[in-house]
Length: 112
Length: 112
Length: 112
Length: 112
Image (cartoon, rainbow over all chains, first blue to last red):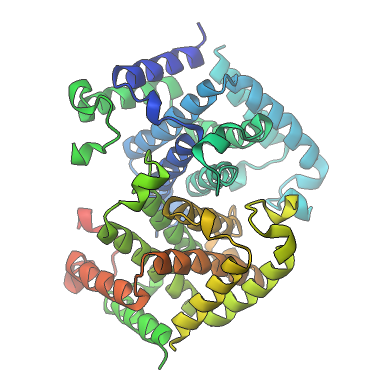
């Protein structure tokens, strides 16, 4: 069993122990990811880039774990292979951001 | 090498080919996750729960992959083991959401 | 004095009493809006459309007020006239969403 | 008629011309605000605080106007008086952030 499968198994067990699959429709799982992402952002609000690097790592872990949890549950709901979808997206992004054009640049591909 | 390590290796290679680590501070990586999460949400805006289940899976994969990409890059930046942080959070959530109290309930732990 | 100017005056007074303008750069004000928007979303997470209409109005007011507060402060920082920018956007959207094409449809203009 | 009422009238007319009230339930209006807030954030992604102050003001206006539009529509849906809810929140925040404790500090009230 891969470590992603192990993570998902643990999340599914937690979910099923509470009979929560009934709430985990696609729209609300997506919404949950965005809410957790905002909680992660809140750790960095009003802080400089440098101050953000000093934020308590345990708090970052906690919020990032929540994002991963809902993201894995959404992937699992639709039978997506996480490695495959990320790998496919990296390839797509390679076309949108050719090395020579995008090197050292944070410009969005639509403006390259 | 675990499949999570393989995903991260691919993301880091993509990043380093473009010399983008300079942009990947903690605050902006977190912001990037939230922006991608909003793009995922946008697929479901103004749609019923049922309509959301019919949304083009390729679009969901694309947006979810972006969320995973920045989340893995943030985890990697801080040396977090993704399986460990999710597992730790599941344990914490087990205390906040005891099975008997939270079964069949979507109530937040603060209101349980 | 218009009621929008009155709102902004009150917000600016609150801010200046605490000497908080130093934190209110454009990037963080924008981030603050999105964090407050996520807190508003959280009131509706895992709830059906119908259940959301029953959510405590005082909680909605509280979160919506935070969104307005940071949005007004950002508008004020850049000297934007709120009525003018909304009115300009309504006109732009009128071109993107012609009545005959968009009537009864939630389709994004890019797909019309 | 106040200028807020004028803004809302314009937004309601635009909505009703397209018969879009059917889509404007509370949950999706809230979601729409957060999506627009993320589009505003995207203007500032990977940019320093200083670079963000140089972002094209027309783009900021466009995204901020969208946030205001959905926020006013949500307020209007529930019959909220925008000036009143912001004013009430300023008073509440005055208690959470007493001047002497919060002056020059970006610390969240829960940590003051």
